[in-house]
Image (cartoon, rainbow, N blue to C red; front, side, top):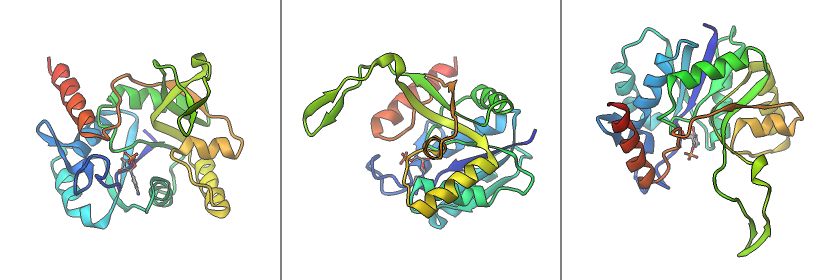
Length: 228
Ligand code: C5P
């Protein structure tokens, strides 16, 4: 058990139309973030969890941690102004002996513990991966309101988290990003930009990112199905 997990949870509720961090919104009987943490705790592969949050959310986060029945260490880490900055802070807060790190968005609260375990297994033989699923829709590249390209769907995958990397590689990629002013929306993009190979691990159809009120309703439906 040497895998460390970082959970970026320092965002807001803007696209959700909420006046606070969407991860604190209730989903069935508990906050979104609690679902994410419980799946991570149930994963045999994960030994340590760091949660990046904004200081004004710390009291609520701490309340959630107190409800968790686990001996795994869970650390609060100050988040940044962007997801990328939050992950960078998390990397700097990892224990010195960490060699493999998974990054998993707090907003992907339906990921299963089996997915975390599968991801860690892959990371024992490769340097970097992302969970992803093949896209079902035909995707158009659009400029203004004009279609400029229709990429071959066979090569298109929708990126999810967990994403996982050897710690040194990801830290170096983040340092390069700070130096060169790169801004990206996921960690794999940084490894791609420095020219390192990143592989795909099959994600889960239900591993959606709760972003809008509609997503919350779908997440609730999926969780209710799982109870039976
Ligand atoms: O906003 P979005 O859902 O795309 O963010 C993805 C994840 O990154 C969320 O779990 C959110 O809490 C986190 N995040 C962060 N720090 C920020 C912005 C977002 O940790 N400054």
